[in-house]
Amino acid sequence: MLRSTCSAIALMLLTLPGAAPAAAQPPVPHVSVAQGKLAGSSADGVRRFFGIPFAAPPVGDLRWKAPKPAAPWAGVRDASSFGATCMQSRFPGEDAGARPPMSEDCLTLNVWTPEGVDGPMPVMVWIHGGGFMAGSNRDPAFDGTAFAKKGIVLVTINYRLGALGFIAHPELSAEAPYRSSGNYGMLDQIAALKWIRENIGAFGGDPGNVTIFGESAGSTAISILQASPLAKGLFDKVIGESTSQFDPDGGLIGRKNLRQAEEYGKAFGEKLNAPSLAALRALKPEQILAQPTFFWPTERDGYLLPDIVYNRFARGAQNDVPTLVGSNSDEGATIRMDWIKRAQADPASYDRIYGGEPDQLRRSATDAVQWQMRSWARLQARTGKNKAWLFWFDQPWPGRQQLGAFHGAEIVYVFKTLETEDQPWTDGDRKLSALMFDYWVNFARTGDPNGAGLPHWPSYSEANPMLMRLAPDAGAIPEPRAEAQAFLDAYFDARR
Image (cartoon, rainbow, N blue to C red; front, side, top):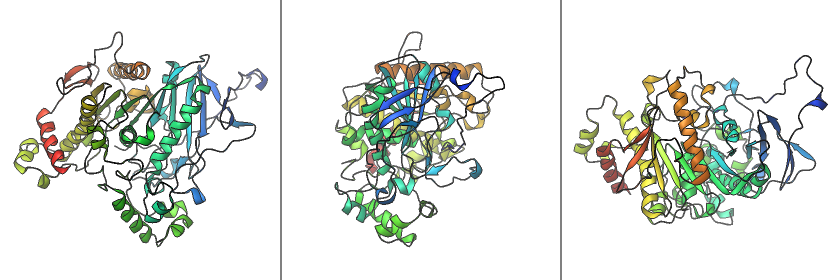
């Protein structure tokens, strides 16, 4: 399920009757970054700095251009409130009245860091999901308080979405100095990582120990960043949760190169009666978002990605860092994507694997996501010098048992934010959350999830294809659905 990230959030200072005067309150923490001074907020032993610009607003002539550096500001900038969410269309079932403020001026990030610790501390950077069409860095599930209390500097970032973030167009390619277009949302992520490398020390973070992690489209983005030469040297470890760009069909969209993406973008403009770039830039963002469409990062664009992600890893051309990735045991309960076409496979093999399933799409989609993450770990282990670890999240929410361990279900366990969901959480859920949190923190600190008192998690290899089953009774197991995974190896190899 693409997690709804449009819950309204307000950061308020409460003044109770009889409270001490303002002068007696704890001082608001200040930090200095390259652009100027920031004033955040402080509570519960954690300092918070929200809505920090990491790039110039991509508006006007900067719409559909690579991000430019953020401008300096005078005085002390208030960083006690979240910035705007990037422009996005309303998803079915979403309560439009609960949406946070949206704007094209949205390239901001948030930082949680512990009080009283000068550093250097490990840094974790969260990239949200939402199909590259929706999402925000301000979702309550992504609250970084628990990480900060554990001595981690936690950062969440925004990036441009949908047509505003990923359209390619012949005129855009012609005007760009690098002669390509699209992938602006990915370039935003790279700009954020550059800003973090340069400025995170002001928050106590170690710029030489940065882990990027994300779920769904955020995880897919991380696989792209690990494959991209533009992101080299900007991070030190990666964690991917459920989906990646290892599908050789070019991700969900199937546009495998710049020419295909440009043709799609040009047709999109014509549907809006905006056949030229000038006409597209003259449109209001709401007009652009009103046109139904589905944009996705472009591989083989000649700039961000010289080849498809799978091939970059297969040749050992990826950014070689410790890699922890995995999927959930019932992804297809909520992402019902038909990745595996019976007509394009060996029908007899397809029927043997899925013919007896009560819900073939649910099972096949789950297998396909597992294959994507397994391929990520397998290729990193095969061609990289740094190790890979693979997980299998296998815990249904207690109030949604019928969905199994659905897509995105693991996020609140990782962040220790179970309370943001109205569920009858059990001691088993809390135990699993503590376990996953410790694995993620250990990995961010050392590049290895293992630690004292935790079930041993063996690194993944083709010779020893073990993964960690994440459940209250967690333990290492052989990768599940081996016959289905072998079938998918043949299926995707043929399509590549």
